[in-house]
Length: 120
Image 1 (spheres, one colour):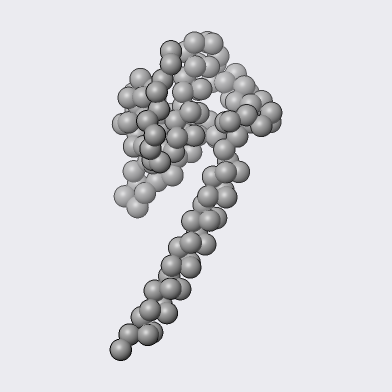
Image 2 (image 1 turned 135 degrees about the vertical axis):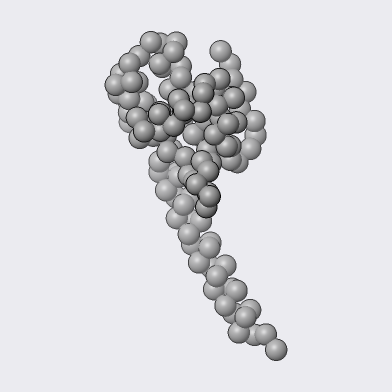
């Protein structure tokens, strides 16, 4: 089964469910079971999956549905991928992105303060 992932930055849970052809509750369950799958949430608590998260979802589905792994077996397999430096190794990238995002937000807040202080 070849899944086409649209070229977007973020996906809502319904979009990911449609791409992976699984129910939303299945995705929420997988989030609880697999450490590598942890989408960010926006201010209203809505899940925001990145393209790499969608790739992980598709890999989990493949392992469980096609390869017939158990949840425990799929966890082990995903950890082996991560150790080998496969495309599923995203945690470091995510951490770097979140750090960059925090720094950018801090810089923007400093710019706002400077602009507020220079108002006539």
